[in-house]
Image (cartoon, rainbow over all chains, first blue to last red; front, top):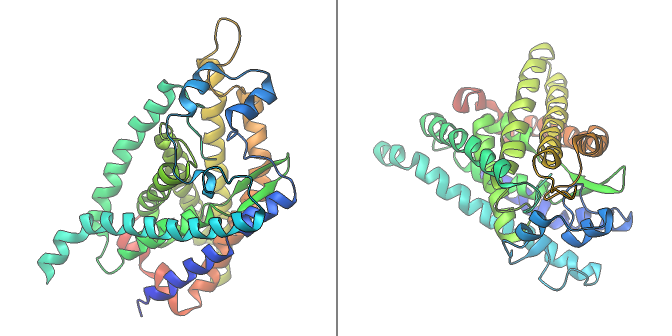
Length: 115
Length: 230
């Protein structure tokens, strides 16, 4: 009854469909999410880069920024779609792994006592 | 809705971390007491689910984008505290690996998306599912809960961004962090979320509850109330 495999398969299907979330905003020329602009965008919008923002913005360099390979943010949509799907699959693995470690830490002792 | 680094001044993001710390503690303690080992994998699945849902960007009125979170759906399955931990996992991975949301603002983003959303949305769901007890009624209650939860999170996000000019404006009148005041931030965030993003969240929540409850995987929602608690 507790068939987790069906749920994991559902997640992989979601990851395969994820480029919809990349293509539709692109096709409709939607901009960034509100309040998630880059410092350059802010500069264009208000005429200057807020000093604190400029200092903090680059505090962390993510390895796969915005679900695209670094330097390939402007690559053709098809290739970015592939990276997007791979990012989704990596996300499943990372969230699954993180969730597994957390729940093992939380329920581990009880499980061992029971067996 | 993922606040990047540089948008919140240190007082705000430190306060958000300070507010989240005890909430994470309570969540871990409650789940340690109540989560059965057999249902435990649902937490990892929920984290991955929310990660993926947030990849589906939707163009919003006003030329921006937004996305659903799945937070209320997760709260219905594993309880709001379980939802807090699973969405936290998703947000931390988004920030560390994908630069979606800042490092300094993980506390703020968790407060909005992993705490405010599942708790408000789940409360709305519980309230309504008492009134709408039928199978379809429960799905409708879940859908409305999703809409409420996403909008509550959008509102607290807008509040955090909108108070920055009040807290941090230089002598020259220039903003130091997020530049738009509450009078701009709230309407800009809420317009898109009250209409389209909230509707998408509501549809995902309601339809998943409806179809999953009729499928072999109906157990996902069945004993949630007893096992994870409100």
